[in-house]
Image (cartoon, rainbow, N blue to C red; front, side):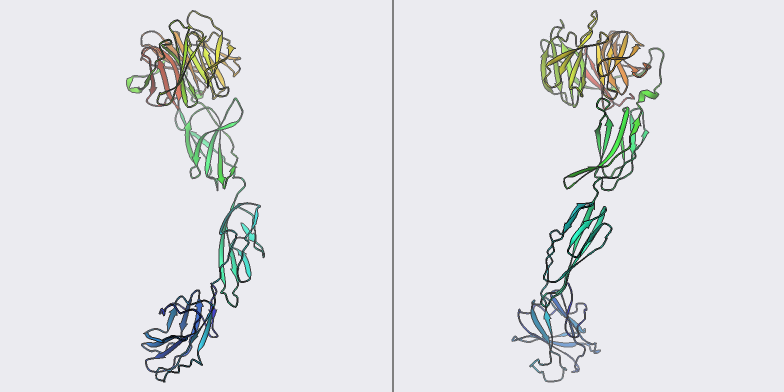
Amino acid sequence: MEKTKSRKLKIGFIAVVVGCIAAAAALFIIVHTGAGERVTGLELVQTGTDVRATWDDMDSRHYEVTVRPEGGEKESFTVDTNEFVIRNVTPKTTYKVWVEEGTRERDKSGEDAEEIFVKAPQEIETAVDECDGFTKERFSLEAKAKGELSYASGNEKVASVDATGEVYLHKTGTAVIEVTAQETEEYGGTVKYVKVTVNPRSLKDVTPTMEYTSGHDVELSWNKVDFAKKYLIKKRNIATGKYETVATVKGSETHKEIRRIAGKYKVVPAADIHGTKIEGKSESVKVKAWAEDAKTYSSATVIKAFNSGDMVSLASVHGNSSATSFQSLAYKGDTIVAAYVSKSNTVGLFKEYDDDWNVLAAETVSDVTHANGITYNPNTNSIYVARNYSGRSIHDLAVFDADSFKRTGTITSPAPASGVAYDESNDCYYLSTSKYMRVTDSDFNSINFIYKARVGTPGDVGGYNGVIMACTWNGGSSSFIDLYRAKDGAYLGSYSMPFGEIESVIVDDGYLVVGFNHPRVVYRTVERVDI
């Protein structure tokens, strides 16, 4: 607020509070010393709704002050400093101060009184009190006040303002616009501050780096980007060529450990500013799968023998009265699908489970024979069933809609597959027989032919991160998961799983989920595995 002065006025600090003076009244203030000398240098200053009076220091212990509103009763009091403050003065009112020597008879006429006209406080109205915008935008403050207005920016590189109150946003950052209303005859001057935040239309780019922290993990790191509210970890989908979000990180973080799944990754800075979504760009970083550098073996070798302490039981799996025999598992996004068949292989059953193994859906299906292997492809939203089994030579796969479990077609396979797996990280299928396996593209065209290091009763086959996981049962509790590198067929060793007749294996966030038929139980490894 601007300060309003009498003919001899200047600003000071509060000493004595006199009080609130009645509206539209003339105020007479008489100040004299205890020795009776006349005080000199009396000055009055208005600051906001207060009037402060000061006078020359007379080296007196105290001063006697008399306050009298025009037409009112006088009030006298003693102060020991040469200043006092009248609080909450009435706007648009003239206040008079009359001073005489302390020993003289008081002149009550007030003819020689100093006077001050108390100006009303002034307010500035603006269209916004605080503003967020984007570079290259502009807006008007639309300021209104009693006095003449002027404008100034505290940071013109970020935002400037012209004489009419039009604000121009130039670059990211913050600026404070100062709006000043000049005083008028009746109103005091004042200032209002409007904070302006200028947001970017796009975010700066990210250059991620990566470090392998284990056989199954990799840590991504990146540079911090201003204005980013989050970072989207995106992985390239080989099937579509598009980068899809696999993890989200807070804007304050610059590191993220993810599963070591082969592929190209980007770290994209993102923000949602007042409903406007903006993103930056990211260079890609390539992550190699564990299998790329894994040790290879020339003959059947157990690289880890799992025991009961290494596994946790997830659920007992049972079909229905017609289809009792559990055969295979497949992940379908956030749920799991299990396939069951009757003893005669004439009736099949799909059951869909949530993470807690509660049944979400069940559908009887036909023409799946032994349903020895099933897999799910999210790009086609289809479930593929390997129909071949011991003593048969069935060269096709039954195809079902993953939502309704209705049959939608048949795929001719290049081998009589008793196991099938879709590896999303490589957009390919793995088909398993008793003695060998085939790698195919997404259209089931053969790419690679791989002989097995271990021969036995073939179960389903799993596919993950460029690794083929072939389930093999050699009778009793002699069950194995044999690992092969899909790229070149190299044998990477075997996991011994002595818990019954192994049927199927899938991978959940680095953990093995393994299904057995005798007993009909699904287990999960306690720890993540290198795969």
